[in-house]
Length: 162
Image (cartoon, rainbow, N blue to C red; front, side, top):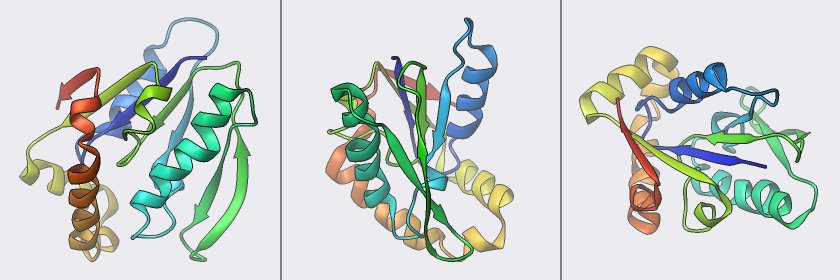
């Protein structure tokens, strides 16, 4: 199975790139997509989601186990159902925290997406509105800590400016 990870700061264009890859994929097995927005356990859950991808999805996939991920219910503020991943089909994981020192060796392609800070904030707020704007500083703080600890851009096999 091919595993593609797409990471970069919020608003950089990760989701759009993932959609473009899926739309243009040639062959019968279109990639399954896991959006980390569905995995983060709340606004403070970037690190937890990054670790979840490794322990529940990528390692089991590479070790012949049962790859899966658990959805976070944002309305109820609690974990929800588990989702299985078909180990015979390509997998694309996109979101802040997808690319870490633990996940990079488990991928076939690691993509870093970037744009300037003013533009990415504009995009993120336009996409998610006031709900995100209230949490921007909290999210940026944990994102900065993640980048300082993991240096995901240096782990990328491809850098895409948007």
